[in-house]
Image 1: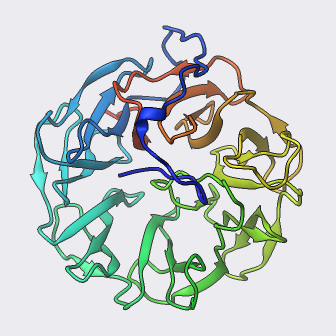
Image 2: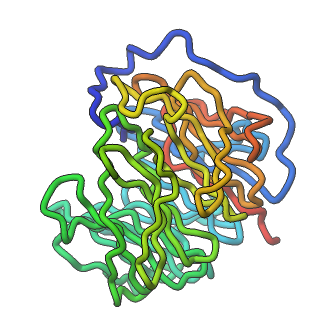
Length: 365
């Protein structure tokens, strides 16, 4: 379970930089419609764990317990009362305090559960004994498990549209070369699979990506998808129109632009090295986080960090951005800032290797 920078050999975690930047951490709670955090951490060589953090970023507890089995890929239910996750590579659900634990699947290797917007179904990724990746869906109680992709290609990174009308995913089914997977959408029953674009993500030496996040992001109205892809030897951020397939280049910059995350208010957070005076990185790119309108206008820089910084997720109320700061060997720490780049908080995950973050909507009850 490792994040890796493209085109750079990681020699080991013994090389962690001695002088890492750490912002002053506030102890105030976050205002607005934002709840707990669930974060996967690497607590040992074979057994990642999930921790629950309070809304102020402080440590609360291990979820559902601290044991020598893998706990992966937490995903909050839309009402904020349950967490779906991969327990020893089977999909399970439990309440945030770990009670009511129920295993829903028993396949070879199952990960990345995603609740449907109406909370009646769960999307997940299943890997069989021959290591073929397929995307399945099931009812919230684990019944009616259905293979949606059913293709010999590798089908991964399934995500519901915000309105539940479609599912996006990544596949190499029409690609002849490594790193040339495509972005596809399908109906929730697996029908009408449509290719939107090729995802070429390995063109920049030293380029970064957070492997546990999908390489694309749905717009709040479910009409478009933002993604990064190679154009003229560096990555640009594009949007694809659902239905027509029309592509629009949103960045058009000679630097490397990547990791788009569409916010609830329609703006897109993304990472870029455009202010580092180098379109192609020598070693590892130092990215900063930027904000732009859905049409690519009004680009604003939010961070100014000595380490690579990538946006991961918007808060449920759209006022804050969760992000990761990576050192030169891939260790990361998680932070939250206001959407204008102010009021930075560090999350107390108790580990420097953090994956698969998710932010709880405030429970309805």
